Amino acid sequence: MEQVLASRSVSITELKRSPSAVLEQAGSEPVAVLNHNRPAAYLLSPQVYEAMLERLNADLRQSIQEGIDSGPVIPADKVLAELNARYAEPSSKLATKPRGKRPT
Image 1 (cartoon, one colour):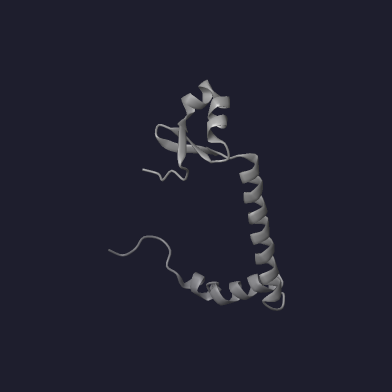
Image 2 (image 1 turned 60 degrees about the vertical axis):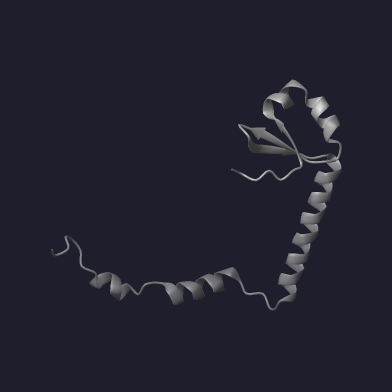
C-alpha cells in the first residue's frame, strides 16, 4: 500500500460531491485525494504551494551556485569525448567477434 503523505484525506467521490466543503475543512493543511484508497493527488493551499515553490527555487539556486564554486567549467563535448574514449569498445574487437550460430 502506498504511503499517504497528509494527515487529512478525502475520496475522489467526496471531492466531486462537495469541493468547497473539502477545501473549507482542510484550511491550510494538505489533503490527500484517494482513488480506491490510494493517493491520486494532493490538494494544497495557495500559501503552502507558494512556499514549496520558493523552497525548491532556493535549493536549486544554491545547487547551481555550489556547482559554479566547485571549480573550472568543462565543456560537455569534451567530457563526452573523454567518456567515449575511455569506455568505447575498440573497433578491432568488433571485427573479431564471430557471427552466425554458436557451436554446440
